[in-house]
Image (cartoon, rainbow over all chains, first blue to last red; front, side, top):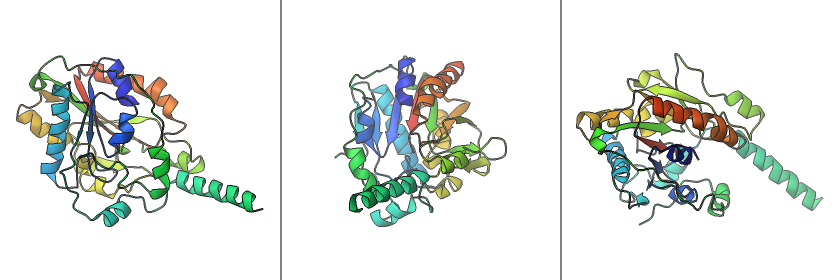
Length: 113
Length: 166
């Protein structure tokens, strides 16, 4: 949403995201997809080479107006999926997760009651 | 091959995101009006980073009381920021790695290297950090903080913005 506001103001943008399918639903002009867990759009801590490669790809999209989406699927996250899936998540579930779970339980209870 | 957008998403969210309706169909596209090597570039994250000694943290206390609300404000992160200045508040992410290397979310150091190499003209003096969880707050982004961001970008003479939702 912020990207669109900035584009409307005449400043070109590129969005780097782990959810390129979702970004595409906002009809953004330039999307870079990365195969990394949430919070790590540019790679893992200390991996300057990967961070720079992602930044460079983003800049390249700004130079190249014919390409809307580029997925950097060749990049590798240093953890296995299971560990990475656990590691990016907060230690305490976020308030909305707890809130939604309580609402779902309430609905289930009403159904069975 | 396409990146799997749902690879790390909690299973309970997957259906909602996959079925998330298309929000916009018309592309709005500004063009870079100069060579990248002459352009001033800024970067924006939604990882909830802030300067721990001089800025207010994002308001997570209100979000705990009101789970559908997320702090819609943003913090300005200067280009000379160092790792020891960084704080982070984000109830939807484990913030641990931001305290090790903030460049995973806001690659200021990499952009400074690209500036030295002449790939970009310059990195902006001020870069931006939002807190990405917005449900009730999206209207504030649209009406207040988005326009404020645009004003700040223009004031700094920024020619292009890299956004990285966390």
